[in-house]
Length: 310
Image (cartoon, rainbow, N blue to C red; front, side):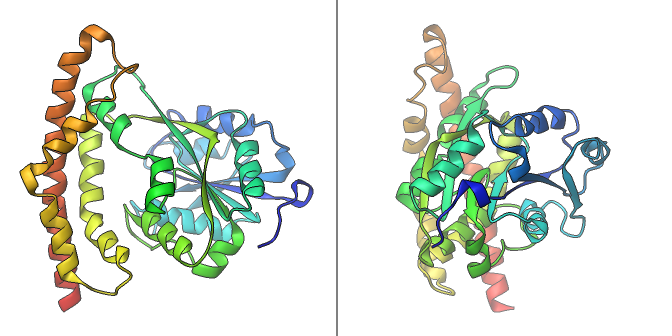
């Protein structure tokens, strides 16, 4: 593994984007105001089929704009197109909805060097844009737990990742054409191939908590993709019995215990007088989300079995 030297370092920040014209200027400003030498990093924005004015707005900034309109609704294909065009020896993957702190890039590279790591997963802190709702609170306390994912499950999400170029050279790009789960599958492959992945709390970005409708859509996508991820857990090409066992374990009382447990860490998020009603709302939404994910899991398993037999 080659050591990183700040003097010969060049970084490619790759961001998939779709219909985000209303906030893209604020996002790009946060990238361009990093306390890092601007000559040492490029910003590559990959449009995934926007129908608003996003592309025209992007062209007003000193960024590289790439179009990925063959695999629509696939941020992983968008990231792949960016990686193919990137000049950097470090690839940084960031979501367009994230707002990095001013020291984000410096801290991520410092962690990569200090830890002699191949992949760094940065911290994602949920923010509440607009009204704080029970659905947003549930999203914030249950999703994108980067530290836990990296240290306990040996996987990471692509919302805030720093990756040495040689990792892609060795194991390839992300799966093409998929909407969800590609980051989990790819990072697990990288760790199993011997690459070191570490969490870096200092490389921090804020991330918007999702309102109810968006949360339901997201968890449905995640549920559809989970059976494929379960297969990868056991390092076998196909083991349908294992997938069924994972699915059946989620049917026990419809995971009633899980949302109750997830509704507890609300201290500091909501006012004391609101706590009881918020607990109830979070519990109810948690049950709804788990039922939706179980339904999506079932369809995902059916599709796996059908594909295997075709």
